[in-house]
Image (tube, rainbow, N blue to C red; front, side):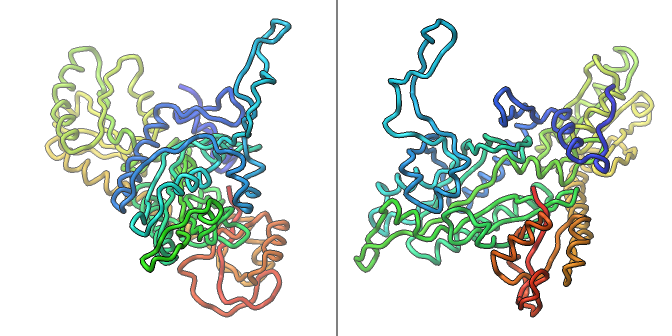
Length: 490
């Protein structure tokens, strides 16, 4: 058996990278900054995708697909959007290769230069709003509520699997509305959908808020976000929803005839979450033994391992376990019976622990004789023996209990690592400890930038539930009426 994982407390980054690799989630590819998502990792992403897709459809959205390539002129039409993404763009300039005249390898054919360069999409607002121009003529055509599951490319210089990669998977919603109020309501509704998914499916407590003007999405009038705290005390932005105003409608000359017979520009939103959620899932819950997966997102919820000597014992245990397997499946619980004789039971215990399977059931000959089965929880690493007759009912309840316990543990961690500070000295002390800091800010981008320069802490958001409270900016001493959320972040 290979040696254990590096300890989180000693080297969090190495622990994370090793866990991703050893649990079979993903690995680096031959293309710099790009990842291969392995079957077990992709199975988790599929469960995320399925749950989110159901939530989107329940709120009236439909799926579509738009091109991977964005003409450079489209990106240039919305100036703020263009400048925000320019440094991360991968650009296609030619459409053909040819054999090198010296006979070695291939070269770009200089005669195959594109008339207009194409950007590999970093996001799809521009190509979608160019399309919407053909779809929107009247108020009767609104609202348009569309989501796209896709891959995007942002040429990151420093990459880390799931958290920041040159190519990643995501969904991006793009909606058009007849009124400003309706669009704002949509942006806030989708933020609530993300928060509900994070908390109920990922067991990840999040803080809902709005970004400062400096941190807004390029081209947005308002960016809403959910922020989560990882176990190393750093924040991670887990999802964003943007109110885009009429900026993209104006840039692409999209107009509709309103009920009064006047031409008007529609109002827009866009919103997205990505495979970065995989990184959040790993970092928020996992431990030195491996992954800890919330049951709702675990590809495999129950593993059953027989402990036996010889084929005769295995046959007896298998016969006893088979009705349990069938009953669990009927309940919609994903279960696997690992009777593979290539590995010993001790190796299997460690392997499924590493992979974060929520419940492990084990049966040996003594259990068989006593009509019992051993139950091990991944979240608490505790074991108990239960009667076979009630095991299915117990597993059902236990999966719910584990889901809730993982959430409570993450919430407790966040509460213990959220600090209210009033002085700069206090701020400097707490930021070194890690965690969320609630402090007054004078509302200026200059102060925001100074704090970032001196501490590497950013304003994660202005919490939506922040109360009016007279105070003084922790850095400048100027008046402030609300606390904002600071942290160092991924």
